[in-house]
Each structure stands twice: as C-alpha cells, then as structure tokens.
Image (tube, rainbow, N blue to C red; front, side):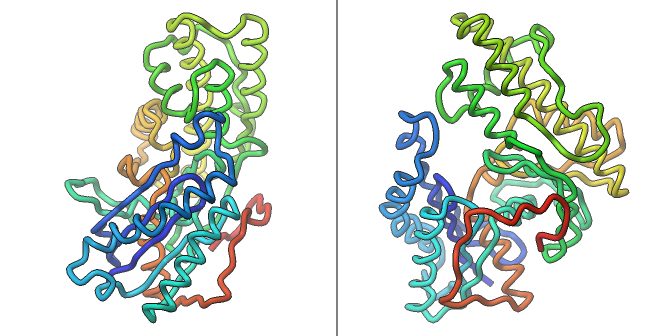
Length: 345
C-alpha cells in the first residue's frame, strides 16, 4: 500500500509517500523560515500564501519517487487539524481535488496523532528499534506540550498537558527576548551546549507538584525579568549561560513528568515526539533519566520530529487500512476542544 501524505498545518509545506509498515519512499519539505524570519514568528496570512505557491511542486516531487507516479498511489492522507486554519485549508482543498481527479480514497489525519506515531517511520539508513504498544509519549512542539498514553493508532489518551505555554513557544520567546532570532529552539539549544546551566537561578515550574501537567509561562517571565534587570546579553558567554540555565529547567520539567507518567501508567517505554524532541539537551537528559529508571527511550529521527508529511501518510495508512474514509465534506479545525484528560482517538 502506498499512501500520499500532505501536511500544511503551519509553516512547512510537505508531501510524502509511505507504505503501511512505515517505509518512507519520499519525504519532501518546503520550509518557510526565510518568509517569517523578519517578523520573529509565523505570520498566518504569509504562511497560507507560501503554501499555495509550494504545494503542487512539493506533491509532484514526492509522487515522482513511485515508478508509475499517481498510478501507484492507493490513498491520500491530509492534515486537517489542528493548526493555522488558512494553512490547513490549502492542504485539505488540494487533497480533495486530487482525490476527486484521481478517484482515490481520502483520509483526514490529526496532526498530533501524526507526531505520536512518527516514531514508527522507517527511513533509509535508519536502524533504530520501534516501540511496541502501549507506550507513553511526550509531544512537545511550538504549539503543543502534552503527555499521552498510546495503546494503538486508534486508542490514544491525553494524560496531562501544559496549563499555559507550549515548550517550543517558550524557546522561541526566550530566543526573541535575548535577540537570537527565529526559529529560536535550535539557536537556544546550540548556545546552551556552551553555557553553565547553574549560572543563573530560574524557577522550576511544577517540578515539586503532583500530577502530569506542565507550566512554562512563569519561566518565560523570569527570563524576561532577568533581561529587564540586566539588559540583553552582549557577550556570547552570558547568552550561553542564560540559554543553558533556561533549557536545563525546561528540560527537567519535561523529563521529570514523562518518567512519572511511565511509572503511573506502568509502562516501560517512553517516546519523544514533536519539534522539541530534536533538542540535544532534552534527548540527553531523557536518556539518562530513562536508563536510571529502567525505561526504554525511543526518539524518532530528526526529520521525523519536526513537521513532516511522512507521519501524516503513515497515520493515514493505518486509518485507511482500518476502514476509515473521508469525503468532500472533510473540514479543517484550528484547535481541538480543550481536553485536559481524555481520549483523542
């Protein structure tokens, strides 16, 4: 089975062809970083326009990996939420048109579920083991930070989430506060590797409290107050110390709650998902903590952490194989209902 996946939920226009067992045959991503960098963040209207320009060439390149092109495609999967509504609309309308023109089945895919299943993708030259079900997954990105119990592609429950800001959003805001630019996460991570994480004392949100929830607004505010008192750091060493101190606290919160979730749900498997899973500091701290607790850590390849269409194609393949079909009435949604705990699939 060959499923074409289309992803346009935010600032990446992506298309991919993936098989039912997760083999990635093509994975094409058109980034919009240059479009949004002057503004320090994603501008929704500009994102939608960039998707319009990129989506057809990206799909054509992805399908070209198949010997007979579209004739070898069995179904089309597309992200229909959550995300920027205008951006999602471009992907969904394109997928509908292709499905109609080629007489192919259409499957709508939740972007978050795609991230939670991305660990099962099999990319070229990748030999990492894949987790069995069930597992606990930490999904941390620019728009979402939550913990999930994943029993199967069709049985996923949110077991805790952030009360305010997402981890990735905190990274971007801190980067902007100290003048690093956009996107902030990779820049903060690179500087943090050169700094002293104990040099600046910052609050440790939710660390000592029971439950599986996160909070990062106070940490972000503490960095803003430090900058207000001391000014934007002008030397690389001070910037590195501030980034290291901020990242250490944020990563501690993510890892501590994730390990606690594994213990609470009696699961010895932890999966990292989402763009923040590409963070070096998070990967290192999670590995050390999981090893100490007897938990096996699974981290997707870097290309599978950030937004991509391969995870959408794989998730769509699982849903299609299980009998799910959508039609021309498929709509987009910007946000999920505010579920504090409960089923998302």
